[in-house]
Image (cartoon, rainbow, N blue to C red; front, side):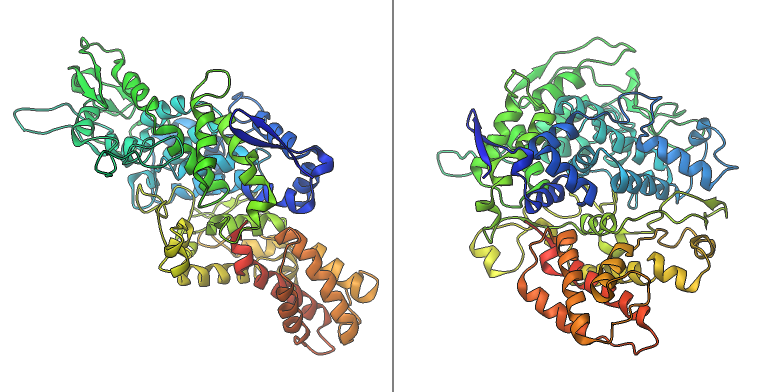
Length: 610
């Protein structure tokens, strides 16, 4: 049994290595990584849940040193761009003098490298969660032409994923990517002659979406109401206008004309915005019940931005707002008020008097009894739909995904060790930093048009993009991965993987997976050997036994050993009916395995995280 240890009002699970079952290990990896792998499963069961989380929280990262072996998103981005366009990007300074519409592809490739193979899985997974809280996007935005702005923004999220939320707020506010996306880059103070006012976009979203939400909250996330029973707004339009004054005078470093951008000519889109005193509002500002005093004009950064962020950071809503978001992105869509309260309490005070310690908040989210105990996960209303992006990465990691070597870039350069996931947002409705709006890919309060969700007052945000169209496209992507991008299928029609890759360009999905272990398991159960002839595949009794062995293996690999018995029955019946004749044993075996994987990965059981 897993024992529980109370810390203040918070029930944290303490699990040693001897406590951790296969199902429990699989579950923490679904919540805290981009998909369980055999190595990760072994590590969790060896270390125990608590020690595995501690190791992830305290491991070195790309942000500890600029000269170590870890590479940041921006470093990977630049390496990929230099490989793809060797005559355009010869040195780092070239990135500030060139742009085009496909540079965002290099950011996506860097993201997938970190997500699929990074050892700091929990850091990268929390960074994704934060990217869906403090949203910027390269979708239909100028940032897509300067992918370095996207890569450097993601580095902010990854760097401070285990840092302090107040520091994160400051870095995000000064980010050129955020400045472009929410239009406070080049923001100017009030001009009486033209009657123009500071842009309010960022000021509003900083409060509404990034930190405190629309309504005042109790620690458990419930609304604070007035004497008439109506919710109390957490901020007013006047608060937005006053905060907008704070966000004046910041522009892209190296910009020759304040507020305008050429996207080249030395502009540094991956460096924090710089301050221009002539466009800043220095008068006093009053918002959220606090006043920031008048400052004298100076070329130095004024203190009002830090003061304003400090006021927001101390708001009672921040703990439950951020806590609930991390719970819903990592664990379950409908956490109890007690769960939210316990996490918010850690946000408010990590036990040492520090507020906003995200390392302790993430630990609290993952080790809470509602995240770990089976009495919660076995509840039919518990869990969350998987984001299509996370369902894809789980599938890819399960089958040893690797980048194809030898495909051609947009300039016909040979690409090695680089992924290409072309316009993934148009296929599965998601790609990192590609939301259509600042409101993320899906609304946090989305309720499906279904009587069960409506009558139980339940939300299911991911179902907003798990549409019929997206699910069909997701299925087709899985099918093409198994039929076109699988190593054994490739080698059936090509001499080498490089031969296959050489005929592909930047507009393709350039990666490959392999089902080698599945072929060996299936054939050994079928024939008692692994010589590749699948000699007994036409013996129905032996084939059925081999299918059972295969399904048990895939169940553990893809579903943590929890696949319902009716799935076994349905899959067995389908796979037994596949018959390619006596001349195509190996092809039939591969298709048996591919169909088993495809139907499991596109099933409702796989697409729901418990």
